[in-house]
Each structure stands twice: as structure tokens, then as C-alpha cells.
Image (tube, rainbow, N blue to C red; front, side):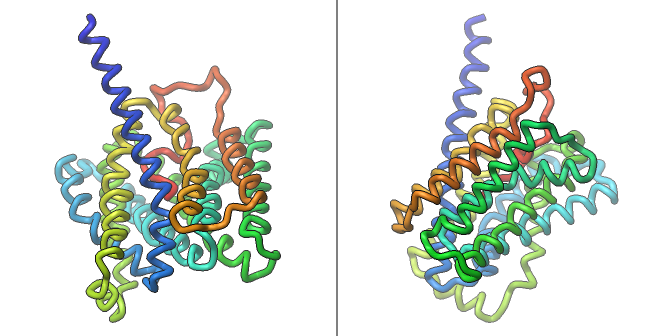
Length: 320
């Protein structure tokens, strides 16, 4: 009996450590993207290089998982659509928007991902709104409005709002991905689905290849190459594997709590590592966004269960 009891405890400890590492890596990825953009790499090239680095690992993961046995044509269409939306849509919107704002502001806008998923699920009849969710979403939206308008410490103008508004396409892409993929979650292995959508999405980035892409690739400095490897190996490949370990060890309800730390930590990393300004309004916006999303995702005690995955955005992807 002691050994039997120790095994679940060891598994839970491993899950906690895995999620902690994933949150730190994902939070740091916002600053890494900003640095690469400031070094002159194009938004599309960063996404392409990131997934080109991760693709062999995802191919191995998909092979080890035995692929997606029994995949129907309809399910295949969902995998293709989800892959293009989450890889091309999410990362291009995030990278292009981050060109015009700080990494911290971008991270707080991306923190809307679970809220947008909930709203989209309500619109298509998969979920219902109740008072707590409405209040949480309202707080989160107010927080984003503050971040967009006042977070960077500049006067509100089209130029200051352009970046955050473009980044909004990233959480919207994330929401669409979750809604499209949800019907498949009970029929296929979670990590295999992540690998398959990532590989499909990588192919979707091929149209972004230009002559300058090859120049950028061959001209990477050692520092820039290290940052690209950080995004491709740590944040993308190992990040999704680590998230899967945490999800299986703790269940979705407990695992999702870790994601609330990503955007505040991203703001802190941006301030310390690349000296981005942290204004009072940015801090206020962060509290409202994170608190609002946490409130909107919270379920009544009678409906909570780690044995059945709730409708949330933690299915297989990060907000990074």
C-alpha cells in the first residue's frame, strides 16, 4: 500500500514540476519573439523557423503515438483547419502585432484566449453564460481595454493601439482552434493531435517562405539562433509535451490554474530582461485580465471534476 500511494504522489509532483517549467518557458517566449523582431527578423520568418525546428520532434511524437488511427475524412478536415488556424493564424497575428507593442502588452492580450474560447462556445451553443462568467469576461475585457489604451504609458492613438489590436487575432485563432478540435478530444490521443495539427500548420507556413527567409536563416547570429531554438525546442516541442504531462497528472481543472501566471510572468520577464516599461495602468490591466479570466473559467463546485475534461482552452495548446 505505501508503494501504491507513493506512485500517484510521485506522478503529481512530476506534473507540478512539468507545468512550472512550461509556464516559465512560455512566459519567456514573448520576450524572445520581441528580441528577434527587434533584430530585424520578419514575423513570418520567426514562425516558420520556430516550427521548422520543432517539426522533426512532432513527427517522431506522432509516430510513437501510432498516428491518428481511424481518422475519418471529416475529422481530417478538422485537423487541417485547426492546424492552419493555430500555427499560421495564431503566430502570425502574435508576431506581427508584437512588432508594434511590448511583449508584456502582447502577453496580456493573448491571455484573453480562454475567454474568447468561452464566448465562441456560447455563440455556437456549446456552453451557457451565467452571472459569474459574464462578470469575469467583462472584467477581462476592461483589463484589455486599459492595457491597449494606457498600458504602454503613451497617449491613446492608432499607432499605440495598432499592435495590441493586431495581437487580438492570436487569441481569436486560439479560440477557433479549440472549438474546431473539441469533438476530436475524446477519440484521439491528445499529444498525437497536437503533433498532427502542428505538422499541418507548419506546411501552412510554407507560403511565407521568401528569398529573404533563406538570407535570414543563414545570417542568424549565435544569439539569434539560440533564441530560435528556444522557441522551437523549449517553447513549442517540449512545451506541449510538458503541458501534456501536467494535464495527465493533475487533470484539466488543476492544470489550467498554472496558465494564469503566464501573462504576469511575461510582463516581469520583459521588464527585467529587455527593460520594457511597466506602468501602473499595465499592472491594473493585468490584474483585471487574469482575475476576470479566472472568474469566467471557474465552475460551480457541483460541476467540477478532473475525471471529465471541462470546456476550456487547456486541451492541448498554450497561450504563448
